Length: 263
Image (tube, rainbow, N blue to C red):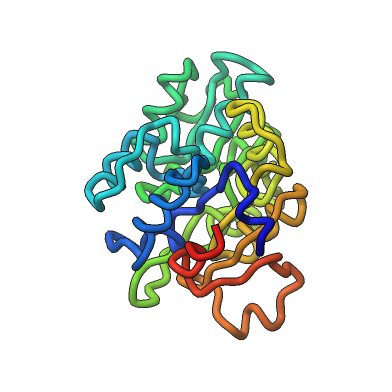
């Protein structure tokens, strides 16, 4: 446990780790304060691309967490950084919320909303505004061979009360069933989102630890990218999932509240 006190930066999942829905998880505020008090850094790292950084900052502030945009990093931002290296100002058919559309347009991309247009990429985010027609158009472009990118692979969005809200991974499965094709996925657990963080914040992997509630995204991110992983049991993962997983965390805690004593 002493190794955790030597970490310089904590990559913190949000949904299921810092809060559930609109409720701050007990001890989360004290945990964040302790990191800052020890002269350390944290970055809120979320796969949820339905909201942009501004929305997350506002949500955290409503919960009493003072954050600025530099402390929030989303799979949407990582996707934008990745695409900008391939083709700036590309034409994109985006399955995303208005918040994600705004983020892409601010980055200089042109959003296509109709069939039979010149499209460079189809990008799938966590689209809570998804319509059948939008999905159908995306499938047509993907079937025609347009390069297909997804912001993240999460199957469900964690909510209080065990409600089952389909996330981008479920949409990926649906599109695969229609087109037979799978996307390049940018977000956790893939290296692209970690590469983006290392570049933007000038960090080293050995100085970081990742904290999250999901085995196949958060914990696998650490395992696949050489970063120490911390699983908290405040979100998606339960004891039966932990007992059967191949993604074994380096550290295990009930919640972030329980990490405070070892920082």
